[in-house]
Image (cartoon, rainbow, N blue to C red; front, side):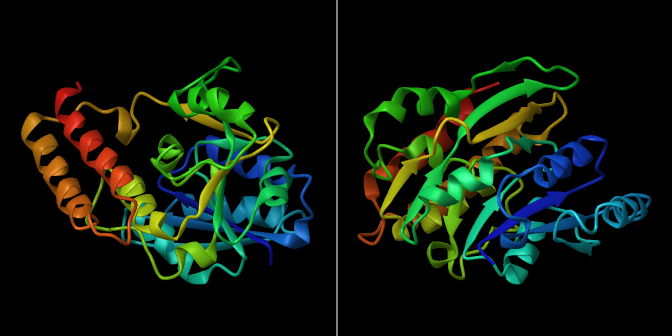
Length: 265
């Protein structure tokens, strides 16, 4: 198996079918990738709805369905990582979707010691209009460099586990921290960063479409005490990585980013 696609889902709505349909439409050979879908938290009626979709599309794509009553994206991703068989892993959030050549384009440039980052476009619910976000801006700025990026220079691509393909040789036994509800992506990427030789940008046709929703966890305003608690947890994680085995300038940028969370709304 070449690629394992990991999708955690919680109380999914119709956008999950859009996400899965974008995988059915991939140009990459269906035999060469698997989809690990993990339903977490509230199971019904979502379990039945997912089952109906899988039955309808069972010959179109290799989907393995897991469920857990423990809610949380980190635990769901960890379950999938423990069961993944692909040489490479890519994460997709259940409300996002990908372009038809996404997997093929990423795999073409993949290597065991590098991360391949994709183009990104953001869109609002019920709208076909797309716009650039901070990752897309970084992609546009760096795509013409035609050379691999160091972890430090490509640090904006290391804030999220999505929008890229990662070798399981890089991930090894690293897992998402289930004690973190916010910032778990950045901490995971920081942990695996010491195994990353460089970051390569995909062709522009490999597009990760990121849905913008007002109610998503990353866009909800947090009370100041809760925000302080989150930042303290992140700082503890990052300061432990200030060792020679990591890229210290890169880890320093993670610490600064965590502190800046306190200044944001």
